[in-house]
Image (tube, rainbow, N blue to C red; front, top):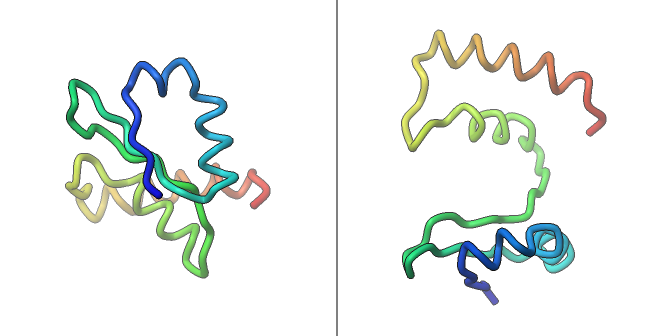
Amino acid sequence: MLQIINISQARSNLSSLLKQIKDTNESVIIVQDSKPVVIISPYTEDTNGKEEYLKKLLTIKGGWFSQKEYEKNKRELNKRFSRLKW
């Protein structure tokens, strides 16, 4: 079941909120002034997990970078991700 909480609750309980999302594998909607602001969803890695994650990171307010900027930023993020253990 999708949970809805206000921003002050999310702020004061962020650690437990993230643990809950991870444990239940369910999203939470955060509202401010009774309007939905953001949804926090658990990260799941699928066959294209890294590529999809990069695309999401490279998206700004629903608009894409130019292809040249996208490729430049993708290379930089890939360098950084190569240092992480997936």
